[in-house]
Amino acid sequence: MRNKLTTRFLVSAFTAATLLLSSAGTVEAAGGEVVDFSITTDQIREYNATVDSSNRQDLAGKTVIISTNDVHGAITDFAYVAGLKNKMEERGASVILVDSGDFSTDKPEIQNYDSKSDDAKESTDKSKGIAAVKIMNAVGYDYACLGNHEFERRKDALDNIINAANFTFVDANINGLTGDKVQAYAITDSSKTPVKIGFFGLLTPESGNWYDRCGYSVDPSDLHNCASETANAVAGDGAEVIIALTHLGVENDILKNQKGFTFDRDKDGHKIYDKVYANGTRSVDLFAFTGEDDGVHKIDLMLDGHSHTTMSGIDQEKYPGCNIQSSGIQLQNIGVVVIDNGTKEITDRYLISEEYYYQIEKDPKIEAYIEKVIEAVQDGKDIPDYNADDYEESATTTDDATVDAADETTDATVDDTADTTVDDTTDTTVDDTTGDTTDGASANTSGDSSDNPGHGGGHHHHNNHHRYGHRAA
Image 1 (spheres, one colour):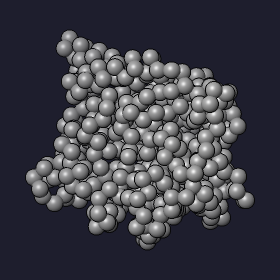
Image 2: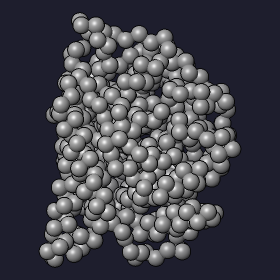
Image 3: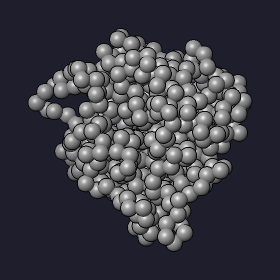
Image 4: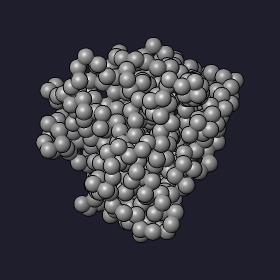
């Protein structure tokens, strides 16, 4: 663990130097993807900074949505997702777990990032995605949308993934998979939360040949119309909060590869990415759509994936209601959304960076189950279903940060703790707020709560936090 943290620090330092040498309007991210968009990262926090120590039930009367995206083989870190769920429930919250796609394939090699697929011996790919699904079942996921990589293997492999899941897939623009397990949208019931939260999913038109067999359209207008019609349907069914689980992304190449699309250009003739486009297919572009009875603007929040972007919003004056959050790649961050059960409104949302996962701690039973899953995959055996009674509450954790915190009185532990703090903090301070300023937008370094009422206050860690992984292509 400590060696991996050191490696990540060195790799991140290289990435930081590369970014600092980049032009103001272009950022080349860790996996080679380019994002000129004015994204904001002002809502990245320590877990401890979210806790009211004077009130042990500080989330009573709240519903918390925990979100992930583009896990890509980082299945050992699901133990932290489970740990966060435990802590939120201990604080009195009703908890819902969601994922925005690309959970069933590894990324064993990621440029300028030390891939976490190695931690699990690439068990996600070796099991054709079933290892990740079984663990997500154990953690207690409720909803997920399919990402483009879920369609990477033959149809029977996708069917196996869907059938193995104990959670519901919401994918409004995939027609050929609808059924009990795959729906256009779903609305929570009172057994989960007193708030009627509607979830629906949208899959990127990029690389559409992978899933043409599902009746999928690659026409941008079809994506926009589907988003609008589905949001209207969800609202019509009584949803009090509408959240889109989107696997669309904000990367430049998504527009470059889009047929029939024409960029706006600046005075020097350069293409302008740093705005939203009514005929674009990125998550941000949906908010520029102006169709009749436009349901898109009924969406309270998009939890996005695909471009592996760490972002808590966008800096875009024209569309202040464009609320988007995304967690990067391989659980670099875990997303949190807080909804007040009384007002039925999003009162806070933020990302918890991996450098603070030690404050969450792993769920010991889930950690032990993940180890069993990895062992079964490596031995070529069937993966067992999770049974909590098979595992001890006090199972030994392998989280070095937690061990260090418990033994901090020794000199060796002091040294290790210092190393962990330096490595992880440096790893997350790369500038993420650069943007193409040719159309008047600039990175927001002072917070975007004025444009996004769903953003609450709290500790803002490293406004310029920036970590990306390899592009999903």
